[in-house]
Image (cartoon, rainbow, N blue to C red; front, side, top):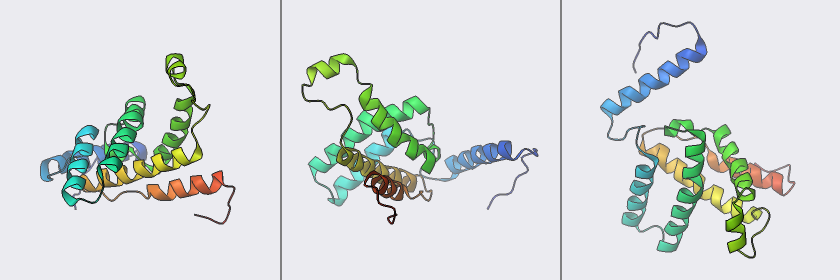
Length: 168
């Protein structure tokens, strides 16, 4: 444990300063840093999965596609600098952003793809969000932090989508 005076009575400012101090301290004392580039975290994850042999090339390609096509664009749009920036509420925003981004595809993309739907299928969103939740969990673990339960968010989203009130 580390105890430091943050010299402020403002709780919001104190939390912000505490997070910055925590990240600074962890960077100096941990093999993994919160400041790691998301691309670097992803590449380390892929290397780890290949070493374990737990996923086939097709599955890893799908994960790469979701990460590079959707997650990086969202990270850039939201200005998320650290893995701690991905909270449950941000993940909920990511789901909504993903669905809206599909509808905003440029016209030249729509002309090139003949059978493009107006919005992505629920199954597509479900699969992509499960992949995103898996990647985020791995990123949190890589930087030595306990991850939020992103998979429960996907389950609740699916339950609402299917109009089920007794699930997750």
